[in-house]
Image 1 (cartoon, rainbow over the protein chains, first blue to last red):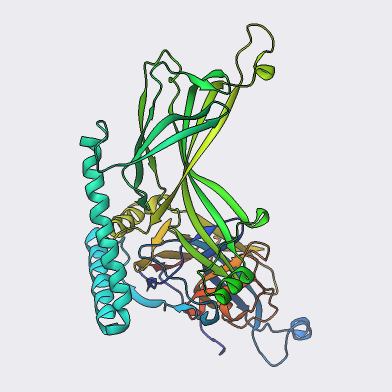
Image 2 (tube, rainbow over the protein chains, first blue to last red):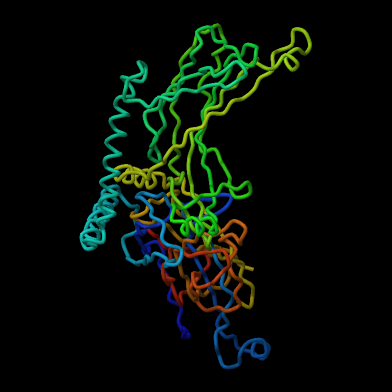
Length: 390
Length: 107
């Protein structure tokens, strides 16, 4: 670092330095889980300095050669949440080379960005992505196939979504239907039917479906007593499941597929979203069918696998419908105080779901909404206090 | 004692393949009597996958040196680097007068 003799004052109102960077496409999504974290940050570092000071005391405290005194490096870490816009393919643990991007400095007029400017950026981004895909040639065949597959999934999802409004009420054939059964001493009894528009949903999209209780009277026999569905809760649950290297190695040696071992201490679940769809099933059978729409949060990671320091964690989702039943307990339990409310019990029903990355137009929309929400940008502030020596 | 604030802002979510956006602001308090010299101001975008039983990302390695260093070069157990940008110097050898603000914007 050279010694600056003059003081080049900045006209900060006219000079704004714009630095831009495009995030690579092959990045794992931001995820803050119980087993692994995938996180991004902008690290801003600042180092200040103080000029050499004349005088005997200063010459004793500072270098007598006229060198500037530099202070310590102060850092500000700004978290950046990355949404996975395209399918993320986990790299092999041995080939852990990080993706690279470069911050570029462009000096512009000091004005806020307009939508036109951003649209131009997005178009440029898509053109670059297309050119990069073309340059990959044969090597990108698998990726293209995957994109085609996703397009087909898009179409299926669109068709299902279009059919939702028309057919969900009538139980059309395009819906996936599942029967929920109770197994008890008196045999297997049907409890409800669950209908879904599909088992794949986009990040930022919604899981749509309906639950229909079979018994017309609102009660059925369970364990010798009558039970009724009093409450239904639907939740989208994110599950972290570790893949042990040992299990994977054993599976590879045996020539089978990779084994995912759910261990009690290596599996964690978090509710991504939930809703109560019905509370009135016990009210004389007035409500026998309820529809629900459960949002997949835009910040949620899609179904994928993350690898951190040799630990591979698979992120999966399940739709969890909890039937809260009243009554139906064994006589020794239910015969409590006379007139007391019959006990309740919860029956969870699970269905694996696949959360897909946002599609292209969704990605564009997400980027636009992120920009328009600039006024509510989270602010990370660090205060650096300079002392006399700095 | 004259506070020099570093204020960094970024919008909520970024989508892979899109532009990253952030702004950095240097605020030098107006009640100060002397200018402050910025030796260098740098920014670096990093991404890490780490096991939760290891150090969180925000806990950086303590440094005694005043030289600009690449944050992704630190080998920390239980942490893999998935994204790195070379450290970019935004300003160097600049003087901030009391009450002055310097902007750096990542559009």
